[in-house]
Image (cartoon, rainbow, N blue to C red; front, side, top):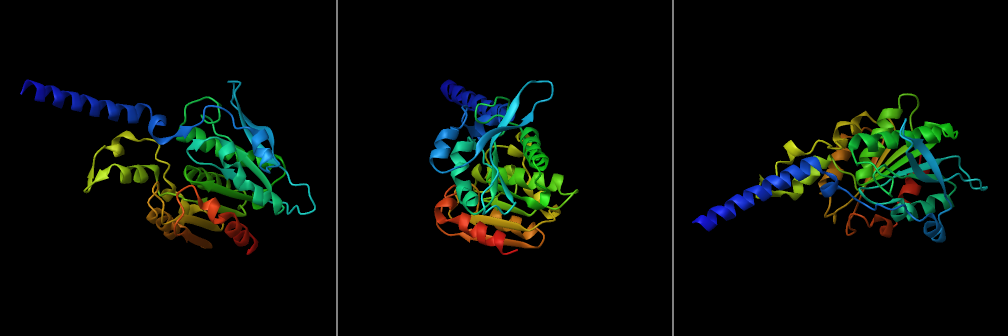
Length: 282
């Protein structure tokens, strides 16, 4: 009996420790960033034409937030720019190949890194990533791209930042488009789907998660055309969330659901071609 009590106490202590860690160290559970910068040289070897830029300086802290920018100066230049906001893991090198097709079709491209990713220090918090996304838009504005010239394209966690940036900055002028690849209703709803068994939530995430990245609360405020791309084979985000988000979005809108590609494999299905066709159909 004494040993049984020790086991119960140990399990309770472990459970409390887990809950405390989720609350105090969300980066251990919801993010998987590389703590080193992406290699621009490797990305360029694969075909990316971008160069490194600093798009945001921390006020009074001396920190810099960097990204990779390509301003298209070819005869194909269509005077549009694709701003790509990446997901919860890796660094910008991991995602940079997704922009090559846009460069080749006359678009300028900008892929900013977030604080907390790519060796750029700082904790990862929703408010920081929101600010980085907004500052990426402001940086493009300073370069001469008006909102109507900007396609904001987010993937996974980046779909929230993309939606937030558009919602936050659209009051001065509408954006050209918002593209959401494998989006979610909210981080909390997605995380709960992974800790629920037989209808019981094994971890009280509603009490522990304060950075909820709730796209569902702002998607209906977007005043530009929206393209949502999900996959029925998604094991990370329940596919139904892409459909739920689509229902909340205002027109004009379109949804494409792929059948057999994993969460991060829509590129392999040629989704960039679907995006290009949709952008050009305006």
